[in-house]
Structure formats: structure tokens, C-alpha cells
Image (cartoon, rainbow, N blue to C red; front, top):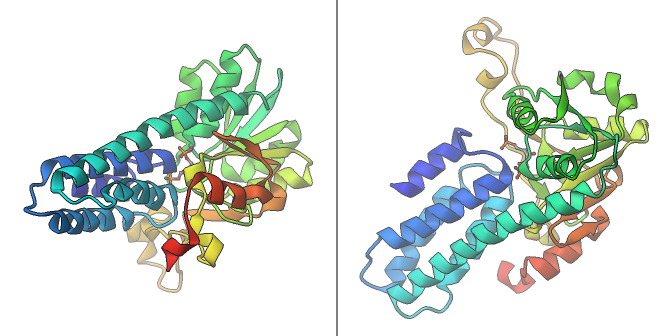
Length: 309
Ligand code: RUB
């Protein structure tokens, strides 16, 4: 079944990165809506809610996932027939996928303008929007050089350097702990986001906050590329972002771990960078200071506080 297939791929990180996860969930809901034949609307809604719950439960941190699912499920609205409900879901899913792709392009265009000719840019993890900005700057003729971290333990930096290499961009590949050694060579840090909270904090791949601290100490600006659907509406009512802790075997093989009974491996996949470490967040609606995250939540995500009750 398409929903469990997609859910398995998200869990195993075959599909990864907050934007791609969100689009994959929207596609899975669309295809599920087209494949089921429930006898009446309430049964359609129930089955779609079951599928939505499976998808949302896959990875807890990237808020793009529940946001996308919420937007698609809103397509059921007040439908009175199964056909109407199905059409609503399919239209919302298509709309989300297209607007997500459009957002990625817009952010690349806006973000590239923050990159100057000759800049050396540091990026951490593998973010399609952050890379979009860098690649667009290169395409527009700016001579740039990138420093990309390895990103232990899953080595997403390898995906990043392949993409940069394919784009013909001069790239340096460094281990995560070498960031401070190179920071004085860097002009700008560009990263993506899994979630942005109402106070402008950015949740992204583990190590991002260390990069941010290092950059601030060296007076290097850090910009975050994040579509509006990465902003977390429920942080307005006090919800916290859950930081996913992944299996210890990603850090230390089980056969070694079992010889070390007093050692507990900790493997949080994400961390939180406070707003004061971030110069700008580039969204498809334009750049905002992180402190303006609330405006994005209210104006562009269309969440009404009443929905939370
Ligand atoms: C990926 C990660 C990325 C954000 C933004 O983590 O932290 O920086 O998801 O990516 P993981 P994008 O590899 O654990 O999914 O800009 O592609 O949405």
C-alpha cells in the first residue's frame, strides 16, 4: 500500500529532508484517496485520517510533514459525497506539491542575492533549499566556493558534495569538528530548516547550533532557507518541537556497543539554534528576521488558534 511504503521510506530515510518528506506525504495521501472505494463520506474521512496518522508518525521533527498533511486533509472540508471529498484531497495535494516546488525556486532566487561574488559559503547537512540558493548564485555567474560538513552519523554531507560537484561548484569537504578551524575563511553560512518556532528558533540537523555559535563568535552571518510550511503553528500555543533520537547503531555498531555495558550512545538527529544566531530566514514570501516568525505562521499558514481547541 502506497501509504505504508512511503511511511517506511521516510522512516528509513530513503526519503529525507523536510521538503521532500512533505511532498512525499502529500503524494501518498493523494494516491491513497484515488485508490480507496469507501461506501460513504465518513468512511472515506476515517480511512484518510488513518493514513494521515501513519505518515505523521514516521519522523517527529520536520514540521513540514504535519503541515502538509493538515493542508491536504483540509481538502475534505464539508464534502457531502465521497467523490467531492476525494477531489478535495487530490486538489489540495497537487496544490501543495506545486507550491512547494515553486517555493524552493523562489527561495533559491532570493537567497542567491545574499551571496556575493567571491564568497566562501559554509553549509551543514543536505538541504535542497539551502543548496538551491548556492547553486543559483553560481548559475548567475558569481564565483563562489563552498565548505560542506560531513554530517555524522548519516553523512548527508556526501549527498551535498555530489550535488555541488555536479553543479561544477568548487567545494571543500570537512569533518563536522573542523568548522571552527575554517570559520575565519567563511563569508556566509547557509543552512535549511526542519522547523521554525514562533520565537524564530530554527530546528535543523544536529550540529547546526554549533555551526551557528562558531559563526557568531567569528562574526560571520548565518542565513536559513525555509519554506513557510516549515514554520510550526502549534508553537504559538506552547507546543515544543520533538527532537528525534535515532538508533544508537547509527553512531556505534551494535557489536562494539554490547562490549561497553556502561556506555549509552545518544543520537539526537536535530538541534535548536536560537533566533539571535540567525541573520535572516529566507522564505518564498521574502526574507524575514527570525523574530518575525509569528507573522508567517498567522498570515501564510492560515492556522486559526480556534483549530487547536
Ligand atoms: C535533513 C535536514 C535538512 C532540513 C532541510 O535532515 O536537517 O537540513 O530537512 O532540508 P534528515 P530541505 O537528513 O535527517 O532528514 O531544505 O531539503 O527541506
